[in-house]
Amino acid sequence: MERHFDQELKELEGKLLAMAGLVEESIRRAGEALKAVDAEESRRIIADDAAIDAMEIEVDGMALGLLSRYQPLAGDLRFVTNAMKINAELERIADLSVDIAQRALDLAGRPLLKPLVDIPKMTLIARRMVRGA
Image (cartoon, rainbow, N blue to C red; front, side, top):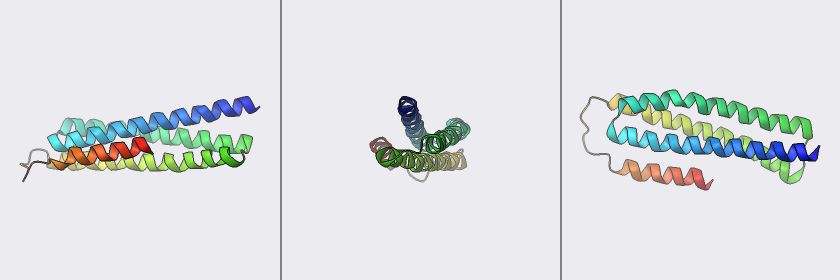
């Protein structure tokens, strides 16, 4: 029984890391789409958010399943509950990437007042924060 729990815990961790990777990529793409005012890439970012939303539901289901089937204690319980919190925050970050992509769509076809030189710096900082977390 404990072996199944450990395996499911590793699967939860792997799924959460995969989701974090998608979110980090979404941040990068949104920053580039905004800087280039790329409408097509912005539309793809918005469409690709559905995969992250699905992963959020899957991770929540995995975590709730672990809690209900195994009733973990101490460190394992903290990991599962923290995974649920991280999951929600990652999904929120992905939604913010979609917001950036939507702003890029709003700007498409309009001249920029000045080049968006700080956008790459900010997206790099945000990506590092996601990776570090």
